Length: 113
Length: 114
Image (cartoon, each protein chain N blue to C red):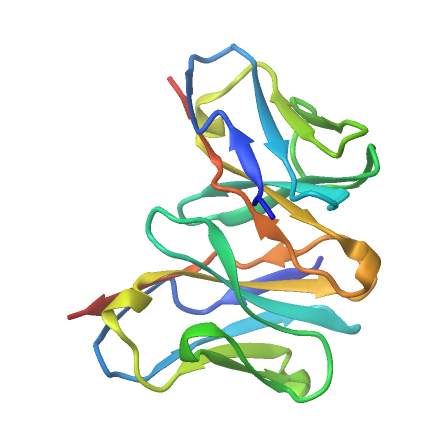
C-alpha cells in the first residue's frame, strides 16, 4: 500500500538553527509531492510542491525541498528558522494521474525564541 | 476568490447520534475531498467527490458517507457516532482540470463525541 513516512514527530529548535524534516514515500511510479503547513489556529496551507523538472523546489517563507527519486525522499529544509515557523508540517504524495493525496502523520516543529 | 468554507466549526455529540458536516469549495472547483485529522495519525483520507460522483474512498467503515451536489458543495455524514470519531474533519477542494493539482483546505469542523 502507498504510504508516507515522516521521520520526526516532534522537533524542537532554537531560532536561527537549520532545519531538515525527513519524508519518504512508498510508491514505485511517478508522483507529485507536497509539503503542507498548519500554523496554530490556521488552515492547512501549501508550503511547496514538486511536479517535475528541477528536483530542488523553493516554497514560501524561505523553505525548500529536494526530491531524490532514488531514495524516494522529499526532505524539507530551511537554513535559519524563526519563531514564527512553529507549526505542524505534513508531507504528502499524489501518484501521477491519481485523484488522491496521501499524507504523512505530520511533524510538530517548535521554535524556541 | 473566497476560500473553502466548512460548517459548523464545532460540534458536540453523544455516542450513537449521527452528524452531518458541510463543505463549500472554492468557486469553480469540482473536486472535494474529506479527511479526518487526529493527533498522531495525521490526515486520513475519507473520500473524494468529483461532479457528484465518489471517485475515491479511504479505509473507513460504512458509517462514514458523503455526497456532492450539483453546485459542488459536499456533505459528510457519520452515523452511530463512537468516541473514536472525535477529530478535526477537513474538507479540501481542487480543480484537477489543469493537470497536476493541489488541494485547498478549509478550517475544519471540530467534532467531539461524548
